[in-house]
Length: 222
Image (cartoon, rainbow, N blue to C red; front, side, top):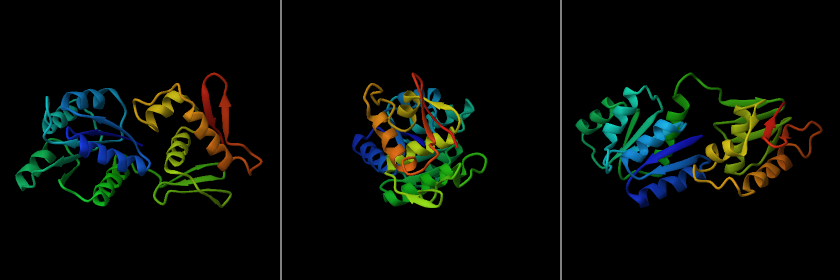
């Protein structure tokens, strides 16, 4: 899943980004409201973490503009203001949740999980491709009942493949949705991680799930 952080305090943005990446999310950062509005309007995100006090365009205005343009991405608003009036203003602007600084990262991450889980139609807790099962809540992966240990990045990559089962997944798609927007697509890191995945979910099984589509990318087929 891909999250946009719109936060002008670089230390806070870096702290949130690091924690989200460790939890397996792909993260982009905008340091002012105009950049945040541009990214939120032009890129695909599953969640926006939005500070209220921003240069160039404040968070409340940004959120209102997105909602007026029918952008329905969940918004978690962050602010140092904790009055009821401020919270109501943020929620009335279209935010889905409101968190006051400073906050415990565990609480922040729990709110992120709730917003991602409840956005739109109910989503299955498990993804399945043949005998491969990925549990989104427990972060466990099994094949033919055998548990497979994956790193956070491997898990995120596999989740993306399983959500696009049967479709060609390009390196650019992986770089934009599993890594950061500024990821260098000319490195071989994606190919390295594909090999990691293959060694873990295909090596010990007769039927192979990950296939190379020469000149295009990869495809997961059950």
